[in-house]
Amino acid sequence: MRAARALHSGLTRHILACGGRAWNGVRESDALCAFLAGQGVPESALERESSSHSTRQNAHYAAKLLLPRGQRRIWLVTCDWHMPRALRCFEGAGFQPEPLPARCPPIPLGKDLLRSAREQACLAFDALLTRGFSKV
Image 1 (cartoon, one colour):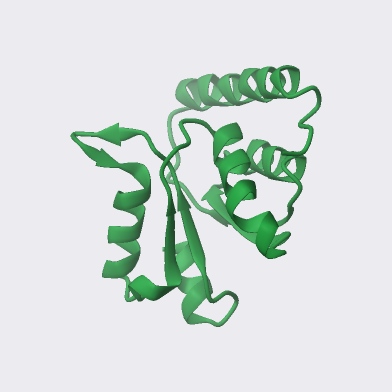
Image 2 (cartoon, one colour):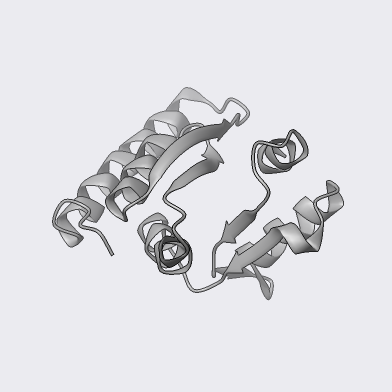
């Protein structure tokens, strides 16, 4: 919804949907594009990146597509709780990302603490794997 609003308001003219993981045979990027099309986003404004299986890979493969076109400044849309790690990954891939967080519904405190701990662990792991999020 957040990406569709950005397009409809004129903030952007292009949306790159990232994600190659599949659930029930449907890839993330295809599901995202189908949702966005249902929100009135024209297919001509959509592009899919279907190779990634992690946030770090989202940034890496997005960089391979967008940086050669000179697209360094991007609006980054993801869950509000996931935005800090996503920003770090996309900055490390060579982007100048601007956050457009999507609000997620509240969850019980225990689940929130687990999610926060997982995000911190993934952030540390990503930094270790990429030697501080080196560029693509």
